[in-house]
Length: 434
Ligand SMILES: Nc1ncnc2c1ncn2[C@@H]1O[C@H](COP(=O)(O)OP(=O)(O)O)[C@@H](O)[C@H]1O
Ligand SMILES: [Mg+2]
Image 1 (tube, rainbow, N blue to C red):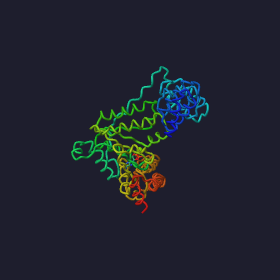
Image 2: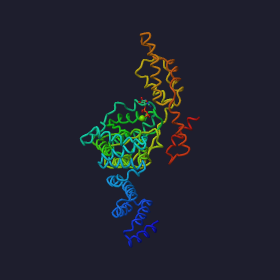
Image 3: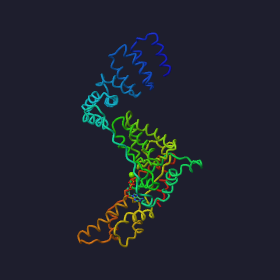
Image 4: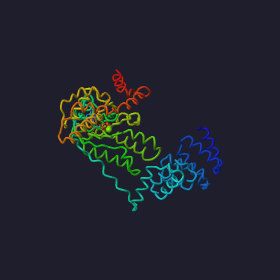
C-alpha cells in the first residue's frame, strides 16, 4: 500500500499533469484513510480539471472526514445530485454549521424530496428556528440549569444502607473535607455512576446525597443539551461546568447518561460526537483543580454507556442499585404511608409479598391503596384510615416492574460481563434465585 503510493508519486513527478494518474493516487490515499494527503492531491486534480465530478465527490468526502465544513459545501454543492442520501444530509449539516443556511435549506429539501423518511431532527430544528428568527441572529440559548439545594436527605430514601455509606465516603466526605482526603493520599474527584432497574431510586438517591451535604445540585439532562442548536451544546456544557464551579460545593448529576453513548453511535459527524468530546474534556478538568465539584451519573442501561465515560477520572466507580430487599421494602412503604391516615398496617407482611417491586412500584402501591380508601370516603363522606386489606387488595393491581430489566441484565452478566462490571448484579441474581 505504502509502495503503491510512492510508486504513483514517482510516476507523477514525471507527468504532473496526468489527471487520471493523480486521481488514482487520491483514491488510494482515501482508501487508506490518509484524508489530508488525499485532499491535497484532489486540489491538484481540480486545478487541472475543474469539471471532474468524481474529484469533487472525493474532495467533499475528504473534507467531511477532516471536519472542514466550508470545503464540504464548496465541493459537494455543485455535485449534490450525485451524493448518496447520507452524504446529502451531511452536506446540509455542514452548510448549517458554516453559515450557508440557504444552501442548507435547499439541500435538506432535496433530501426530503428523495425520501421523506430521511427527516432529520437536528436539521429540522436548526432550519425551522432560522425561519422563525428572520433577523440573522441565532436564538439565545436558555440560561443554564439553576443549581437547587434539595430538601430531601438520606432519611427520605428507604433501605440501601450500604449504598448510602458508600456515597458518604465517595461523594459527601470528599466534598466536605477535601483537605483530609488529600492528607491521607486519597484521590478526590472522578465520578460515580449508579445503575439499576428503573424506579429503584437512583435519581432520588442522587438528589438526597446533595441534600445530605447541603451541596448545590445541578441536574444535566443529556437529551436536552443534545437537542440544542447545532454547535450550541458544547458551549452549553462548558457553561454548566463553570456554573458548578462557581456554586461549589456542587454535585453535578447526569441522569440517563446512556443517551450520550447512543448519540455517539448515531452521529458519525456533527454535534453528537463533538459533545461527547467536550464532556470528556470537562470531566477530565473537574477534580484536577481543587474545585469541589463531584460528578454523579445514573442509567438504566449501563451496557449502552460509552466506555470512554468509564475511564479513570471520569465515571470510574460503577455502582449497582438493586431492587429493595424485604427490609428495605418495609422502609420504603413506611415512607410512602407516612403522611396518610393508616390503621393496623403490617408493613413487614406487605414487604414479604412484594419481592422484585421497585421503590417506585411500592410508592405506586401506596397510591392505589389510598385511592381505594378515598373512593369509599367520597361515597360515605367520612375519612377512614387505610387498612391492611386495602393494601393487600391493591397488590394484585400493581405488578413489579424490575423483572424485565433483570432478565436483560442476566444476559449481560452471562455474556458480556466486561471487567466484572456486573458482578454485583450476578450476586444479586444468585441470591434472588434462592
Ligand atoms: N429507596 C427508595 N426510598 C424512597 N422512595 C423511593 C425509593 N426508590 C424509589 N422511590 C420512589 O420512586 C420514585 C422514582 O424513583 P427514581 O429515583 O426516579 O428511580 P430511578 O431513577 O432509579 O428510575 C422516587 O421519586 C421515589 O418517590
Ligand atoms: Mg431516574
